[in-house]
Image 1 (cartoon, rainbow over the protein chains, first blue to last red):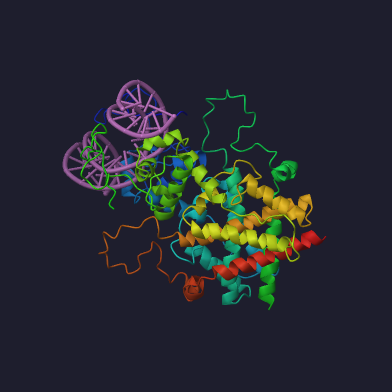
Image 2: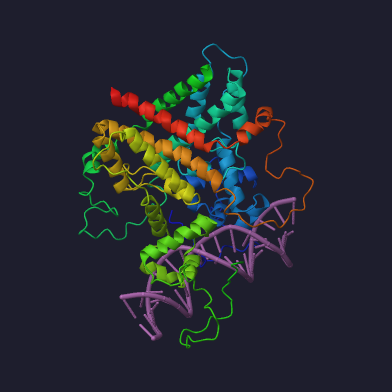
Length: 263
Length: 263
DNA sequence: ACCTGAACACCGTTCAAGT
DNA sequence: ACCTGAACACCGTTCAAGT
C-alpha cells in the first residue's frame, strides 16, 4: 500500500448519489476483518489508532489517515476525541488497561509478593513486546500525577500494585518504595528492548540512492579504528540477551526489595 | 510572543531595498545574546535547536521557527542539515557529546571502577537535568547499532566506557555485561526524572475555559474512592526522593557488578 | 445526532531563481 | 556560495452547513 493518496485524486462519488454503484467496494471504507463496520465510537477509534501505530509508527498516526481507515473524514473524529493529544492519551490508557493485576482474593501458598511482582513484570513486558512502536508513548508521555509513574500509568494498576503488596505483607512505605524501584526497572529494560524491536519500522522505504559505493559503511560515524575496544567487542556487543538480562535484573530487584522488606 | 505569524502577513521589506531603514531592528533576526550574529553553520543550528527544545519542547522545534530564530528562512537550513530527522539526530549527538568520560591516564588509588561508574552516572544525570525536554529524544530515538544503547549512544562514550572498565580490571565479557545493566539503570531512572521535570513545559498556554466548576477535580479519572490505597498513600506517593533513589539504586548496581566482577 | 466542505494556520521539503 | 520565493503535499482544527 503506497498511501500516497494526494488531494488531487479523482473525486470520490458525490454523497448524494445512490449507493448502489456497481463497484464492489467503496474507496476509503475499511471493513474490519470480521466483515461488518461498527459505528464510530471512541473505543473503535482508539483501537484502530493502536493498529496504525503498530504498523507504521506514531508519526504515521494522523487524524486524516485514521479517519480514512475508519471510512470517515478526519473532522468526524473530533466528536469522540479531543484532538490528537487526547487521542494519544487514550491510546496509552487503552494499552496500560490491558495490564493484568494478579488478584488479591484468597492467597495461595506460593503466591508471595515475589510471584506477584514476577507476574506483573512479565505482563508489562508482554505489552512492550506486543506494541514496540507504541511503548515509547507509554514511557515518555508526561504523567498526570507523580503517583502515575510510567509505564504503570493508571490508577487501577497503581492501586492493584500497592494493594497487592500490602496484602502480601508490605508496609505502606515499603510498598511505595517498591513501586518506585519497580517502575524504574521496567522502564529502563523495556524501553531499551522496544527501541531495538521497533527500530526498522517507521522509515520503511527510501532505497533510492543505493549507489554510493565509495563509503562501504553506511552509518554516520562508523569509521572504527578510533574505537578499538568497541571494534574488538563488536560480537559480544551485538548479541541479544534481553531475556536473561530481564530475568536476572528482576531477580536482583526482588532480592533488594527483600532486604528492605525483612528489616 | 503570540507566534501567529500567518502566511498572509504584510510583506516583509523586499530584499532589494536598502537595508539602512530607520527601524531599529529587523523583524525576525535574533542577534545572539552576546551581541554578534555568527554565520550559519551546522553547529550554530544545532545549538539553537537545543535552546528551542529546552524552552518549548520538541514539538515546538520547527524548521520554520528555527530558521526565524536564526534570522533566516527555513529553506536555508537544508544546506546544513538533511531534514528534520537529521537535525534531531544531530541534537542527540550534541547532547551526548557533552558526556565526560573519566580519563584512563595514570590511575590513582581510590580511582577504581566504582568511582569511574559513579562519576559517569552523575554526568549523564547532569545532562538529563540540564535538558529534561530533550532527554526523551536521547532515550527513545532508534539507536543506529545494538552497541549504541541509550542514553550512551555514541561510539566515543561506549569506547570510553568499555576501555575504562577494562583498564580497571574488568574482563571483556564483564565490561559488556556492565554496559548493558548500566544503560538500563540510567535509562529507567533518568527518563522518569525528566518526565516529571519536563512535565508542565510544552502545553504552557490554554487557560481559556476555566469556568466549569461542577467537576472540582480537573484530571480525567481522578475520582478517587475506587482507589483507597492510592488515596491513603497520596502523601508518600507525591514525595520526591529522586536523589536518594538514584544514589541507592546506583549503589546496588555497583554491588551487583562487584559480585560478577569478583567471581 | 452525526457527518462533511471549506477554510485557516500552520507544517516539511524541493527547486528554480536570485544575489 | 549562499539564501529565498513560490509551490506542493501534507498536517490539526474550527465551524457553518448539510442530511
